[in-house]
View 1 (cartoon, helix red, strand yellow):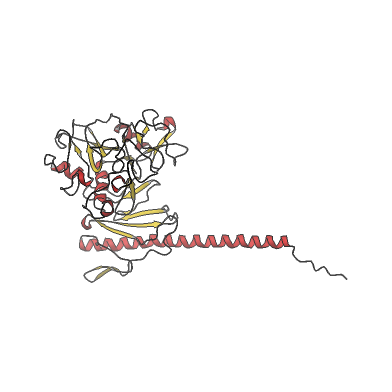
View 2 (view 1 turned 180 degrees about the horizontal axis):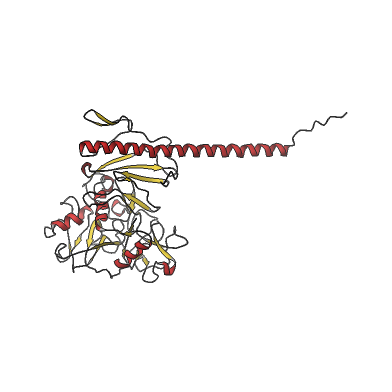
Length: 404
């Protein structure tokens, strides 16, 4: 009897090898994803453990520690609140995360702190990306927003603010900012095509597109409400500004008070989108359009580019009109106005990139802050304040930013 010794054909072998390769690849991907998920879960656990230790330390001492170091204890007077501060598990560059330890910063002389960490993927209720833990908990900011540590000075809790000045997008493509109708100053012309539901458009925080201009403060308040937020307030502005003022990387020589803070885009009437980190006119530090918060978050165009309406009105008794642009060092500015709206260091003036003060022309005028690109004398500045307009005035270089 003749035996049939026929084996697998070459095609059959290739198919089997291909299936094995695919299964192996899927197994590796699944294994790596599972390992990253485990690291992310540990990161959240680590941060919560550190927060508990910091809270106990504060309860006993009245301040948060100046520094904490991975592998070292958090302790005082023989009391250990945590024996070893956990280290960020490696590899640390999961997803979009950078390769670094958890970042701790003492704020407000030890009355607040921020503890920054990053997740490679969505974990529990927290999205992938950077997060800021404070004494209030852990913020989970929407995409396009940055976490800001609250301030006891200005009685603000932690909040999420637009990373970029408000842009306009269609309701169906909310990740793409528009540049289809522009003013002569290269801002989005809201007076021509309002960025509202009637035009199937919505304010967003994205890098692309040009910032919304030709919008009144009253409409800016409404626009923020329609997306579930509110217009940035003056206490919130000051919380950001004081945080940026106290962060050394925002100063040209890397030391707080040494030379100046950057002014952003101020040379030429160009309200630019977020594709270039330098403003029109140059690539020196002065034209840098980004600033870093103490928790490592980056905010765009807080100074320069376009002014921003705030949800705040003035009285001439408090914000006295001194007859034009003035330095924050001017003794005619009331102490209350300076403390509520000016730099922490009373010696800082516009040469430090702080900006100018323009007093309240009429009671009920609204706050316009940050400085715009078309005014070489006013320029920008963390504390630039202009109080000449009511809430119905529009300008191509006056926009806004929302908080959630």
